[in-house]
Length: 259
Image 1 (cartoon, one colour):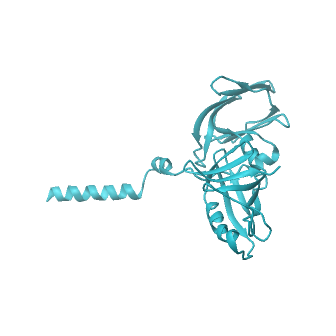
Image 2 (cartoon, one colour; image 1 turned 180 degrees about the vertical axis):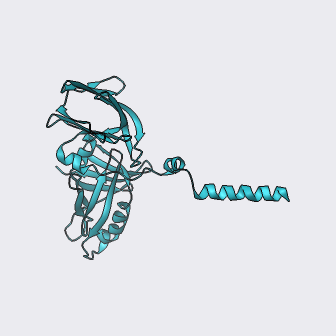
Image 3 (cartoon, helix red, strand yellow; image 1 turned 30 degrees about the vertical axis):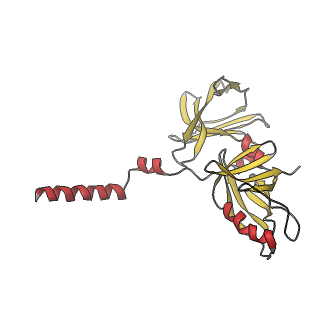
């Protein structure tokens, strides 16, 4: 009888554990598959950003304006002229400058880093020494996101070439503006518009809305496939005037930049 009770008690504990996983375990199991919105940084011209918690802090470097901004929740605030970037052979880069008689040292080390609050994945581990305090967090470079901001015409879908069609004899097209968080374009049949956001790995479109014109032939048949493929977050690559969207490492769509 005692053996049965022991087994039942063990099953109860297992059930509770399954229903109430620890915060740490839940965080480990949460997929990081939704890009954050960096539009406001791009709009202001920031190219290098970092953030952290305990205490909360943020860093933005704007090469165009030549500024370095650091703020923390414990009231440290620094606005300085951005110093020259020093880069090591392993990809680590650093900044060091004096402001108000205090030195600020910043180090970006290439390594996958997940922010504890947003659960977003970044490309660098970042350490900031300022006003006698040490801050640690995550960071990334935004230059790659800026490359997305263009007009792209679809040339292939799942390995098949795409030709102009529909009532306006045009191929599907996307005009991406991350600074505004908007995408416009056409499915080859109907006009489309909606939201868009991206990080250095993923891009996510939608929700998207379209006009309601009925199209005969290949343009009408292809439209639902195209819109359905844009509903999920996709990895992307930008190179040689081409934008490739990928799912599980395999190309789904290839676009050509419009000159």
